[in-house]
Length: 357
Image (cartoon, rainbow, N blue to C red):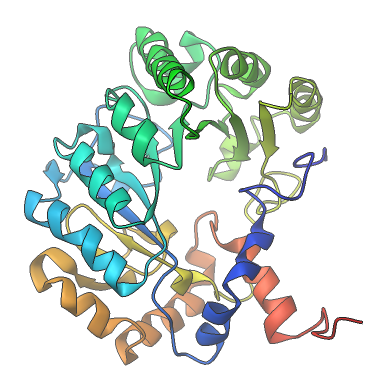
């Protein structure tokens, strides 16, 4: 397995969880501090039809946008609660399809909350707002040719060029105005496009992307078996050669086995470091189990924002965490898997030893 990155000090290394030691101790003591990050889904309903979408259970639901009332209220609420960052995304949808996306980004920035935006890029026209208000914008691409892009996303081939033009427009605007927004090209290892990873990285570098992120996808075993691991390793070596001082390669593999299967989890510790808010209002504990009823704390749209704070770290919240741990076999790929291992070793077992000698 090739090295994941050239420097350990980067935004994709799970060791960054150690910056939130007080939060971790609160989790162990079952006295949760406010989440560090909220994943805020602004829209249910997508313009793509990805065969590998992990939110398939919600595919048949009607399109829904977070109401304007909450676009205006949520940023200040999160600031007052103590949330540090918000990742604006979509729940089987894309946030750029929400008519008030610009307002959401502006208000989050106004309230000193670090903002990230994740999009497929097709409807992305908010170049100026994203460049001024976001710390990062990640584009889900997963392909390096129009043919492979159409196959993995279930769209027309010309969508690929449209999205590349949108990324280029953001990069050009940020460069012209000397804005530090971090632009990412996200590449899932999928059987229908993994052979285009070198082309993808070359394209990303040439259009002004800063971060090229590669990671395995949550796939059934039959689909993983379609990926030639040996060929993939050789391709990733070629990708690594494209890295420069201004173009960074991140092969995020530590959350998966060498054969690209999900790593089993022994305990779910890190979930209360984040909170995920669905477009339809559900506040769920685990970001990877949005579509499971036992994962829901409340509904901030129907119940009101104060209810979120009231139930955070409540017996109901603790019961949800217990249920998540009882159903670890039901987990999809674990976003927090690296965090869980570090918390277990460094805090629960103290196997790193807290002394500085």
